[in-house]
Image (cartoon, rainbow, N blue to C red; front, side):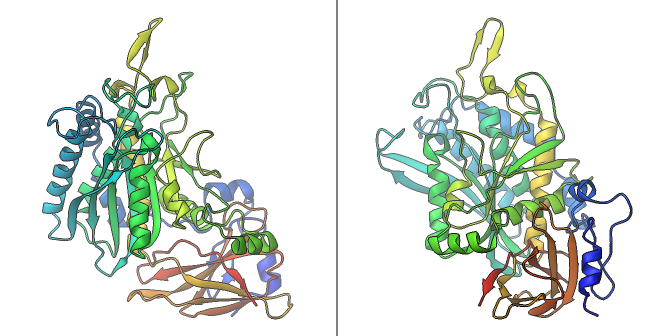
Length: 468
């Protein structure tokens, strides 16, 4: 039975999951915007498999990784590349050895490698400089061409961005993010994701996002199907500059209007809306759906911005190449412990030192990343070709999309919400079809489509474009 307009409209007061044969069930009394913010209708409970994976994430190992990276003195992009004990080259070699050790336990599913190129002189790069990313690739067993990327940058800096010799410990910025990447690589190496996951420790971030830009461009040149990318940058501390602490929140920065938007795409967006429905915003909603729960112990605070004021991160080169990408960053920063020379002034310690990190918090951030990545890699891919048919002016809505190729694909769900709502509030299961009509006006609400597999795992939502 298809939902009638009366049935659907009756459920607009709050979050409702579709019940039975596609009828939206109204929220209980007391529902509404506040209830929706706490638990979107699209939320997915953690599976037993996911909980077991997250339990293996070890704060002690994360701390050991941060302290090891700090021990190289400086990891400045322009520092020594051939000193076995100090500089970015020493950090590079240690990271590769660690990832190779994890790969050895993967049964051949994971490989580790260096990805290098020579960056020609430019701002913050005075002479030709070799930039090297350290990568581990865990190949998917079902849809290996579908790729998800998680990164942190292993270069560091002090107050003067061109100072390549002073100690630049970079514990929070960004040994913490690299520690997240390494711990996820270690835990996931022993498992079999359906899709491919790339674990990346990139260089050159402080000098201009060079390593990430090269990685993103290599994917783009190869026509890679990167369906999601997360960078972890400054995820090591829970204490703000005023001393307040928030150990159970992680910010996720997600842009609305795509950095890669073409004039044609902009014209469509202006016509029908969708400023809050980019692929990156759908990815961010997905993270909340699967990672804001008791399995991670964290609240994911999605911020509707590409990044903070006057700042940028390694997700931006992916956004510029039309890949969905978002940035994890701690809830409130202490700028005395970022981009600072190590020193004491008026009794205050400056510098990005490990004693200012909260390793239990970083482990929980790793769990958020792990919940998102593992669910993405095990669920179907984001539906392709999602369209709203606009050939006729009617008060109903017909959606069409292309069926996925996954062997375990079970069907699809249509989601919708009021245009003023930030989260999807209603879900309607429609079965293994590629078109569906709803007795609800496309002019009044936003629609989306997501795929479901036989294990009940859902993909991120695809936001449909008009088809005339």
